[in-house]
Length: 353
Image (cartoon, rainbow, N blue to C red; front, side):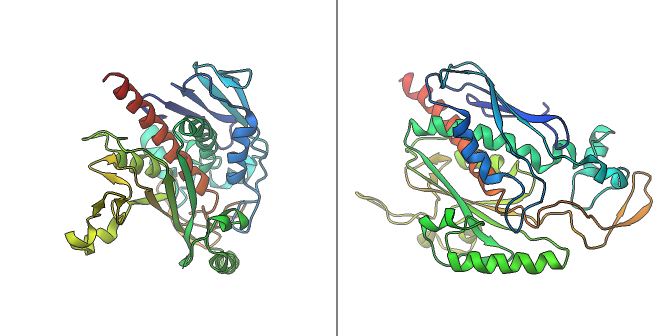
């Protein structure tokens, strides 16, 4: 009931808070004999590690992961995999002035309303710091996807109103925003610099493409593949909207424009985003996530404290200017977790035939 676990067969439970001793994940249902080392996980964690890039917080976390169980001789054993990441650079004293104040745009007010208590140090469980555990688990999920030849690629499509106009796969890892358009990446950097001087923050759009996914993944009613993908991505704190394929643009198309004709060689177009009737159709899966601006800003904001008294605050300290690009590997991880779970569920179906 507490909602800390995701998945049916490949199940992931995350735990920990932003300023606690550590955070981590427990993965149950991972098949045995898959190759796995801390180096595999470290590659993904490096993509969301704080302390680098124009838009990132200056908090320095090594994000070194330890595998506590479920792996022997660099292979998964089929038993629960426990991962831990220690917090090394939390500065809790910076939050003392805010301990009785509800920060606009954060979960302070709602956590207090739900539990009657909250960890005000960096937001506790509601902090984006929790997503490090998701990325670590996503690296394990990729090992499952490798058995099916499935590749997940995430990148920044838009940041602060600057949108990629060209697409070059090789460019994504060549700039700090994971943007497939080098000119757009340069404009994004200038936009971030300008907003940072104003004491404000930016939102954007992340796009994910899944290649090599076979047809047949997904369940026909409540566990549609696109429905669970939307839930998975929306479970990330900064995400406020999800599109599959044509997404909201579909509302402005006619049926003849939106339908994807089939030929002996495959689909002519991909407005469906690789999913039909909640089941993958073998085409490229396309998911887009709308990411809100970071709520911790230096500009003056109106709010109230725990006693209902009006307050005016300016949030100083170490905060991202935008959740992008550090949220990009998080969104990719949630897509990986979803697909790994459905891939294993489908294997159970085909084995029963």
